[in-house]
Image (tube, rainbow, N blue to C red):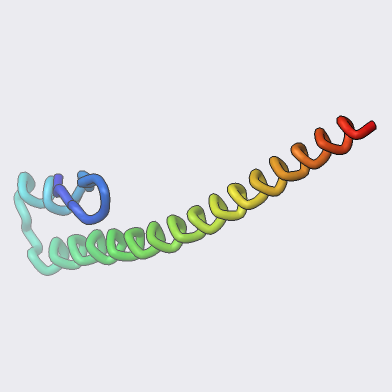
Amino acid sequence: MESVSGEEDSVVRYRPDADLLSVVTITDPKAAQKIAKGYADHQAKWADDLKEEEEKAKQLEEKVEQAEARADRFDLGERCWRLRW
């Protein structure tokens, strides 16, 4: 396993290539290297996808906060209106 620290917390990522390829006997080093590269490519892609999804989530959270603030103002306005009557 590999510890990656970047933002707030450190994240431990599972590296199947490092774990598995370190304990098995490799008969074809080129094939093993190709598999390890495939794992690394997928991990890099998933890291990029994670960044994009986190950004989308943050934008949605901001929209929710704005909607909640609008709803609070509406509730306050409705209460004031009812007190007038």
